[in-house]
Length: 202
Ligand code: SAM
Image 1 (cartoon, rainbow, N blue to C red):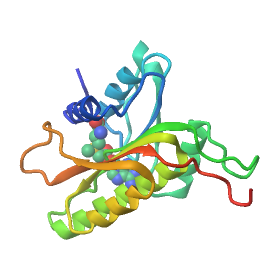
Image 2 (cartoon, protein in one colour):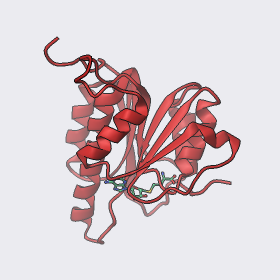
Image 3 (spheres, rainbow, N blue to C red):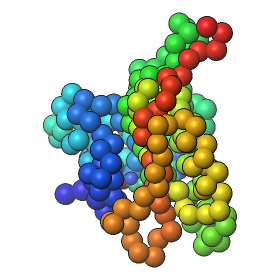
Image 4 (cartoon, rainbow, N blue to C red):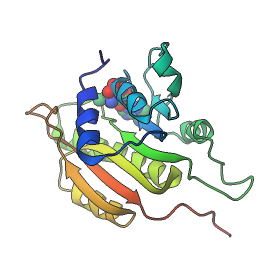
């Protein structure tokens, strides 16, 4: 079984949109307790790698399929976490040899704020997390790579979507059926990262 109901949302997103290929390296931001990590590990297959990041502890994965899963504990909005993600993904830090990124095929974010119940505040925090995830994605994704992030519906989501449209072949907003009815969350998908990041000064 899966560790979280949200696993079915990733299954549906991937079935509909074909986000994850066998052999891929997938970075999952806001990964605890690990439902998406389980689904991603199945879908990348034995040659793939899945890196999960959360500021909450992710209990150890210890059976065979789970050799593919590496977890980091940290806040994705902190620079030091980004350094650890780069290292886990095998990406250069951009200083040693002038190359950056290009290490990750898929960046997923199911990050959500602790909701206060004040919708405009929760929504602003959700959008900030999704934008942070997109910054990580734009740094680390290969050309052709894929991005998917949860965001709470709100008026400024269109601006975020427009920004993504400059960076990906196409962008879609989708609500998986497995999402509960009363929820106002959607997933923004960026398919086909347009250009690999290039080091400044080349
Ligand atoms: N997709 C997960 C699964 O299937 O098990 C469920 C993710 S849960 C909906 C959202 C997660 O985002 C929480 O575990 C929370 O700790 C994490 N999160 C929120 N803000 C974060 C941040 N700044 N850095 C790291 N993780 C964060």
